[in-house]
Image 1 (cartoon, rainbow, N blue to C red):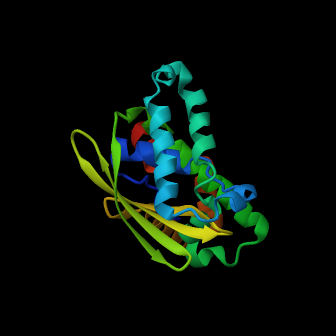
Image 2 (cartoon, rainbow, N blue to C red):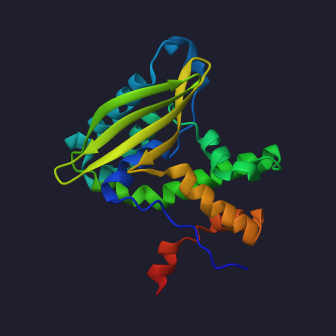
Image 3 (tube, rainbow, N blue to C red):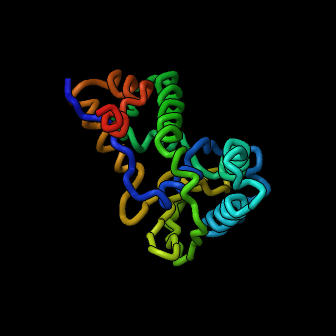
Length: 218
């Protein structure tokens, strides 16, 4: 059995903070599709991030005791704008095809929980970053919104990839400083599956057997 462990997306605390907000429990709600059928991808990203930053900047929610209530507010804001199932499908790539519907549903939930565990602690490192909107590229039902996350110390390119479903745009990948979240985990998942098995990957996701935990145990 290979010793390969799942590694987190190592992009720095400030970047991971924002990424957490965009992936924690994001499942799109189709019930509102008819009300925003003419929206643009940039409008979707801008509106979501504006509200995210408003919540993060709210002094009433900065108390450590307000961490979980604040996180729930953030989940409500972004929960409609990230297609977690699509993200899982792309992360598994060809390994998604042979899975049963039950296995797919299980994987989506495990992957979501895994990412939440990995990045939840980073949320408190947010310190006033702002987003600059650079450009938008459309190709049929797909779009990419290029932005830049700016702080007093650094600037990080942040590109959002979205797809249109029933007239609404949903994000399925984030590229931070040239690194794709989906591709990062696709490489790791594929290596584990081919070296061991899909069942082993599921076990590692379920057990949260990641590199950081091994380091902490040393």
